[in-house]
Image 1 (spheres, one colour):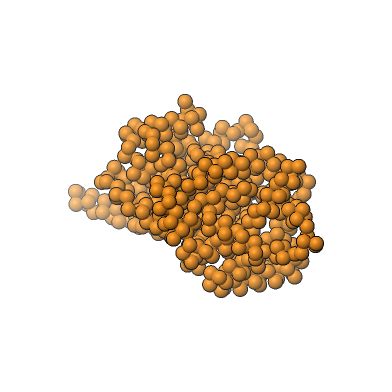
Image 2: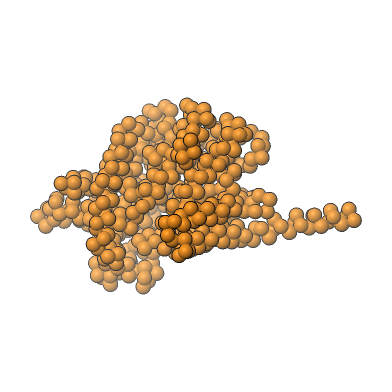
Length: 197
Length: 290
């Protein structure tokens, strides 16, 4: 019986990562992006009064789409360790609010444009880049999602729009603040930004 | 009066040639383009490094100690973005605020009225016509970058759109021939041959730029057909009007971009500088590889 269990575990371990790689990252990201667009295009959610419901729905999708901890850690890079575990937790939550607003805003402005997911390119052993293009009337905007496989789930940890990496962009801004101020000061700035003071 | 001021700025800074290449170049597009701007410590030395080769600065960046053992964190070394020296930060910040106000007080209201009056299809036609005027610069820059196929495509596009598209009113080459625009500008050409940004410069109206890219703007202007029209046929005032119209027309397709950029940034000045450097790096890298 025990031997059996080991065998089954082994088989499961072997099967899952493999199946997860076969275009699964692209499918996952695309499915989530489609869900966001569905919410944005839903006529019943159009009225101003439905704004909160809309935001909550987008928030729920973002939760499964992004790996906010990985994203936060990569954004802060070497500064991550200057934060205590509680501070790290708060940072992830605040940063997440900012990104959800920014991402929703951004994607909201693309609701009427065609979005095409073209391909996924492996970056390293467990990270891939999913390439998509937004077709606007006068221009095309390449948007690449970088995702990482964790516990069998692909989570996005960076979005690169026209060559501009989101985490690199925020890293530069945070680094400026952290270069002469403690983590608490950055958290305070972020709290103000999301209105949690 | 405001329009006059705007118009004269537009003429003084003929970099409009760029407006498409670098979408963030004017405040209205800041969102899509901005980059990482960390002021480098030893400015003078860094400028030299920057001028010589911007990759140097990136190189220094990667030397930082590898992240210590696990924290349930990935062991991969985080890829660092490019940086740019910003010794003119005080002046640049003033210019950044100027452009910000220009957008909210002049460009945006003007564009809103304009879009209200002119239907999107007409604005699209204008956009194609202005873009067609920049095709010669794209052909030449693609050539200079040794991207012969792209240069050929741009040449075909220019000829085809100018005739079949009636002076470039439609993008017939894309619709009928399936040939897509192949962006190329002189700043990118310089970058292609290893010339670094030098220092960060925020230009009035045009927004984020660098020493190299400002030279690029001038170079592109020399490849712009309207530059060679005699003063008696196209007065300064008229040229300014055309430039202002082009800017408003372009902005009409991008209203809201700058707002959402600003909203998402913790420090908009730094965010834009960073986006600029990252975006330009991508364009220069493309010029090297394709």
